[in-house]
Length: 116
Image (cartoon, rainbow, N blue to C red):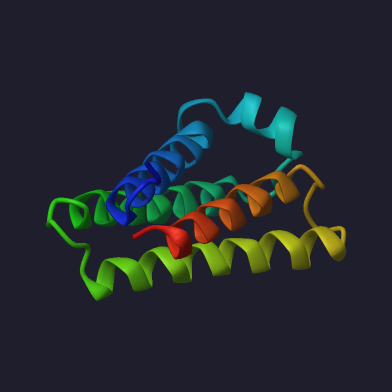
């Protein structure tokens, strides 16, 4: 049986929480994988905002059917992350490893679109 939208949103929330927590908990290992950062405060700020989105998505799965607001947040997040990853890898501003995130975001977006 395919995942329903709530299940996909839960996976998305968990993915966002894990990827956002990583630089907050261990910046050294995060930089080893993603490359050095000049403004660590900005990494921390983005991570905190992604954690807020993860929380909002998780709370949005409590209803039997996710609200339009929860779905809009999920789609907007995924599209924004894909755009940033692809554009800034193409401009050589961030490491190509970020394309793995773009692929994960695209997978989540397609799963959400296909879910009943």
